[in-house]
Image: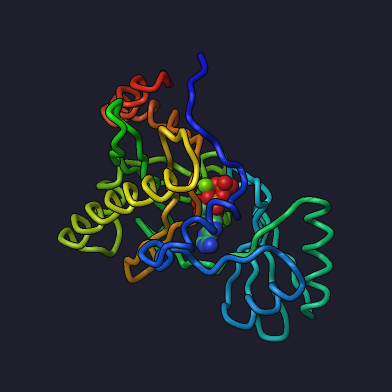
Length: 251
Ligand SMILES: Nc1ncnc2c1ncn2[C@@H]1O[C@H](COP(=O)(O)OP(=O)(O)O)[C@@H](O)[C@H]1O
Ligand SMILES: [Mg+2]
């Protein structure tokens, strides 16, 4: 069963859309296309930088770069490598990238729940009247020792309130964050509509830093939510599907 909703693969294209609007730009971590010059400039400003494929998905092929005394340490999946110079690091990344385009993005130190890093998916869907609704929030709790929280990387999908209750945030700020994240989802929907026609659904991947500030890591135009079906409480899964049916998506 297929359904119609526009898709844009390039994370760079979508990130630039967000960066064009000052009210959204503040939620986007510094992002630049991978090049030798941009690597130098990102590493001079940030102690952790993510290196990710411009057209990637599922948390695949992501490298986290950390500045260390006397060099740089990368982590790919669970494998760590040390480079003594930026030149060697650049060559290593270049070889890894091959002919594919990559992005450099300021690393966000993810907030933790029960000691594990997590990020948030904000699901945004259009009603048949054409208005955007943030239909649900859920979290992806990362597997320890991995750089990506994705379900495909061993992350666990949970209800927002459960994850947040086990975080360091208090219940008042959790409620405020929920409200703010939902507003952010709708704002991104409007932003995307201004750039391209035919979006019916979007999925924001949002990191919270340790102060609780949200950072949009990427916007998915074919957001998956099937892992929610395996949870005991299937109400969120059913809610998303019921909105999805308005534009022909059934799972
Ligand atoms: N800038 C970043 N700071 C911290 N973690 C990040 C950053 N970028 C990506 N990640 C981690 O990697 C995961 C996958 O990155 P994402 O940009 O969503 O690409 P994908 O399309 O592969 O899901 C995120 O959910 C997050 O856990
Ligand atoms: Mg993602």
